[in-house]
Length: 352
Image (cartoon, rainbow, N blue to C red):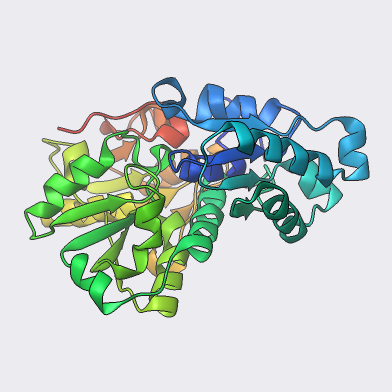
């Protein structure tokens, strides 16, 4: 039945994904809601909330504020907060309320910048799409707002440096991902890694055009990578370094394998499985599936029944997926391996 969920929790919405991108960057983040969407971010969708401070606010919209579109009240609140906080920018994140009343984010951005004297990143999320749509919009808005022109001097300074695009806790299920990527990539001659939004701050985003290349680790980073390449000539690659460390000691030889995760990580694991002798590997996801990265047989999932049917008809010997998906597997499935995905289960992973 369409929309019926017996086992899976609701996935994080696009407003949570946008918040996740902006969370560590030292800005004032305002979620344009009456309080509920902000509660979801702080209570469920953002694991850093319990260990790392960030200025996340609700706009506190009331019925008449929403009906009359009182954007000036939001601008006044932000101006007041800007006087009390040492912030480098303001982020405005949409929810169903401004989406329904047709808020003009460009006008709101100009109004707030004039009142606050801070640059503003406005992300027109709806609260209806999934988290990775919000991540994609937020990354792109960040680079469009802050990234500076590529110069020979700065490019020389950033030689051997790599930018990581598309990493948030929802995607990588690990709060120390910058350090982990750096340890892995240094073996390939990389000098330093800048994981935008997870370890690397606003200064690194300003210099994002000057890195040797950007590495896209989830579908949410692709649009930004293309923007940086088209605008500044910064090349990009796609892949998830060290993906195999998430599933050590798995025997793939001769097996038909199904991998359910975000697409870049799943594709990286597919390559490892094929090297290890898997007879076939299918990738599926409940989230973004970029067509150019899909192979014949790959599946974009929407409902619980989609996954049930896929597993039933696929005759797989091995499924790699978050353990929250295990109840949807065929009872006769020979082998299931937990591949943690915070966006599905709210669990963080442990790398080997």
